[in-house]
Image 1: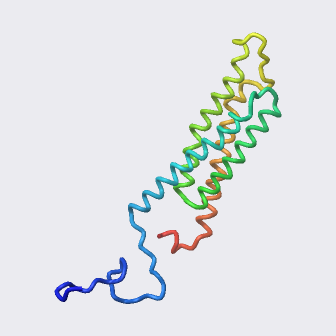
Image 2: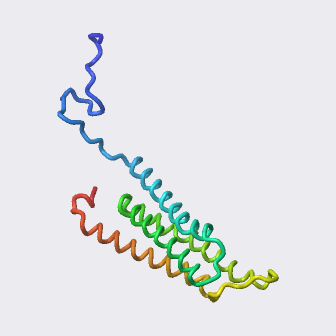
Image 3: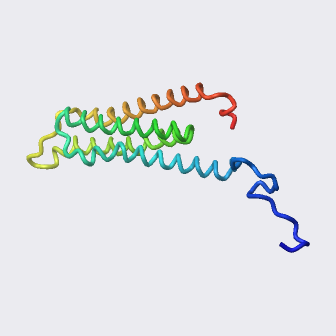
Length: 168
């Protein structure tokens, strides 16, 4: 190193003090916003996938048992994904999970409405045994219940963490 150049510090600390362990980098605003956006988007996509895939893979829904099986699998997968995102991403995961319920609920409504109303259009087609009100009731009940459960879980998480972590 030439004599006229100042001595450079260690790492990003810009100091010549040697530490026993690496220091923790301060959270930047950009990293926080980017992480929140990533968690929000991931939670929304996960909710849509968890609710839509069982209906697409479940085949024709003719009986109440078929509907309960497919709706139950979708609701359990969505609940699990919402708990994971809410636990690890906190508010961004909660809001992303709730936001993902809207397009997923519209998909479920349209899917069930198609199953119910296509009967008169196709000769020899047997309509499902569940009534037309299930087309809007199933996504409405599952979405509202999931959102309230996640909101309660988030509230419980926020009450359990110390106040110093809440401000960070």
